[in-house]
Amino acid sequence: METPLSFRSTTTSPFPTTTTITTKTLTLHRPPKTLTIRSAISRAKKEQTIETVKQQLENCHLIAGIRYKGLTVKQLQDLRRSLPDSVKLVVAKNTLVYKAVEGTPWEALKPCMTGMNAWLFVHTEEIPAALKPYRAFQKERKLEDNDFSGAVFEGSFYGPEEFKKLESLPSRAEVYGKVLGALQSPAGAILGALQAPARDLVLVLNAYVKKLEEEAAAR
Image (cartoon, rainbow, N blue to C red):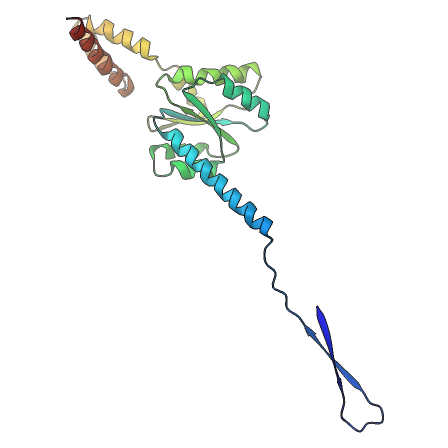
């Protein structure tokens, strides 16, 4: 806003003159309250998402990323309904997921944190059974471009081309059957079972302990 100030000259000129000086009023602009509220809400939502991811990390056996670009809200809802209770789907920005997993073994997910990802949190040792519903969903709807972007299992990163290894892991029942068969076989077969990968070895020991407990209870 401008306020004109007028001063009459005191000279003896026959033509009196008026000098006008214009001053400007400075106005301090404060950010609208609506923007401040929106920023606070946005920050709260981000913190809530990070906390949700951290909660899903508890008792988690595998995390897999899914390229969800192009999927509709209804398709995501249908996908959630197709998953077992032991698998949770979370749609979150890569940056927020990384903040949640930073400093943990799940940080190995970083190579697949590009593009738009939805995240599967698997809370069961039955990995193939946990991944199967999405494969069926993908095939049924012909979503070739919406493949897995990567996963972390037992601290190791698996790229899209390595998912067959995860999808062909033996089930708990198959491992137990193999172990129980080995326990009734010569020592060489038992040694072969003990030389299996770490995950299978843990299941071997668990199965053996369970067998001993059942025998003790039957006495």
